[in-house]
Image 1 (tube, one colour):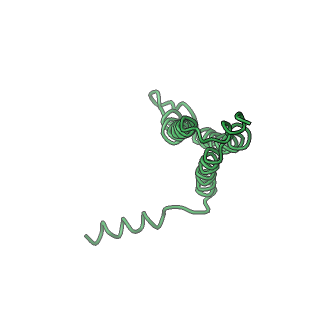
Image 2 (cartoon, rainbow, N blue to C red):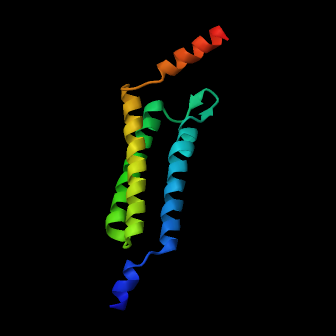
Amino acid sequence: MVAALIDRRYHPMQRFFIITANCALLALLLIGLPAATHAQWGDWQIASVATGRRLLFWGLAIAVAGNMLVGRFVVKGRKGKMLCWEWTGVFAGLFLAYWGFARGYFNFNWLKQMLLWLQNHL
């Protein structure tokens, strides 16, 4: 009976570890990975654009799957599970946005045109 009550309680350290791990993964994927794959040694680039794109897609997919699995099987409390599912949504949204951008479904030509217009008229 006591063990069941302890498992259902909310563990604040669990929240800290979930947020810390996901923020570190997000920084690694969005800052570290592009910096590492775009590094150059003289005229030689370490990785191609396709390799960097593939690594980012796989990293985001692993983050989505990892948060889903942790939220389903590891975390016991309701608040911890909700936090894992929120991070799953964040990484899934980033995955879909990057996938759409890489496939050309949306682009930023409108922003380029607007900035060029402002530059010519100001």
